[in-house]
Image (cartoon, rainbow, N blue to C red; front, side, top):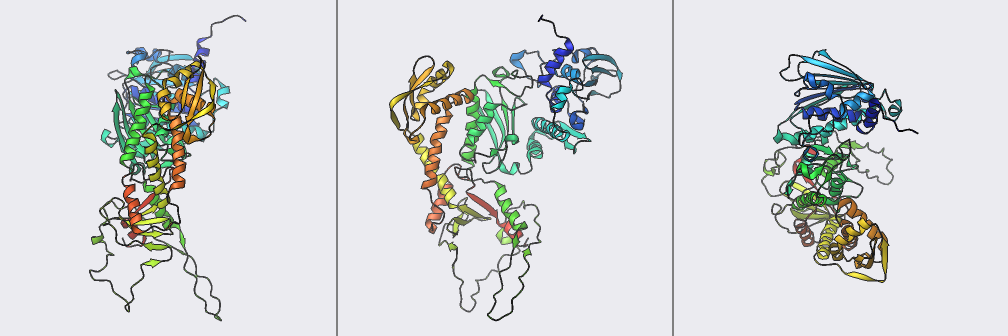
Length: 615
């Protein structure tokens, strides 16, 4: 079969297979071009999930008449002045417009700043028509119709209009987070309108909350860290504020939205022992890196990046998040209290069954009582008992017939004298409910503590500190294990030999493509040494650090902590309860147990008053 030169149209269609995967890819490329042009207002209109129509209008600098033919020609761009080593724009490959024009009907109208008028150029199936005069006040308007009409095979693999429309919305939302000063407006007959007004840089969290959710700001902490020229900013959610998928993780490198495996792995590692394994944190992270130290030219979609020093980036992300989690160890998610209040609001409370005397006729059961009280927004002003409309009179409590109510009831054991409630963040223990939960009181709230989960975290942190403070003991194998690997994997393992030895794993090089394992961590008991070494080698390949063995050791510590902590059903005296609260206030990450469950829920007294209709 003879070698032939492909036609330009076919070359463009092949390139389009990488750049234009679906309508959302078209929107991403065109919106990024608008942002590179300095647009402050971007309007997106779609129809048929983007398959029938995509129209994007911006108020950017526009394209001069002489450059319009070049704008739709492959490998023509205005963004490569610094070469591939210094890319500071979102787009740079010069492939988007010609690729789109090869598989759709493309119309490009633009009016450069200071130009006398606008001009339009058309691209249908790779064939150009124009430029010719057009009507446009300024900026650029691009219209894409009948996407993939030239390649029907690709059209068959697209999802439903609803799914493609949702993908476009997600792309716009991700880009909008990084550019709070730009107004985005997404409309069309196939969707509900999405309007994101421009905000000042100081109010960027408002843009994030509008996209991620209103509850994010109340359940997140700020990040601001740097190391060796790499800087991290943004917000990350509390461990008790999590979601079922990783779609709520927004990561940006030099303003570019990415889905980088290294960073996503670092996020998982940072929350490893404070969140359930099947849940995912919510975060918005911005990494600022010298353009010379990051390669964004990995894939035409530009969603993957490569760092010159991946270990530095991973360490910065993990260290910054863990440091803030330790500092905010007693900050719990508001979702716990809101969920509890919602249960009160919607739950059915049945009246006690009436007492029936012997011989009396049966009574019809009383209808269930449902509260009709509707809750509003949580009050902004702090709760002040002295101003409460339901505060008791300034008089000693009355004694009815000389009877003083008992301090103990079934399932509720009141704590005797304790520290003043305002002295400590978790207040003073007042009672134990069901021998499983501690009730504590602060100046403005009621705190419910799961005694087993709280003590489990304390024991776990103590075990981790003891195990990581010194090299872990190892057990010698009767017959050393030889594990066959690739030469590259052997090099990585040998480079981390000192770290692995601290965790009790002793190995040495055994030829160019193998290692010999002589000792394994004693804590792990009987272990499959070859499987363990291969897992660590994979971890080193993906993340650039020997974290896998440390996670295994931590898992052993978590199991030991679970079995060695205070169990539900054990009666605690007041000094024991208060001692537990004081330790929680000192130990990092004590808002969740090592399985990720919340250890306490704080209920504001103002909310309790609203529950009883007193406010």
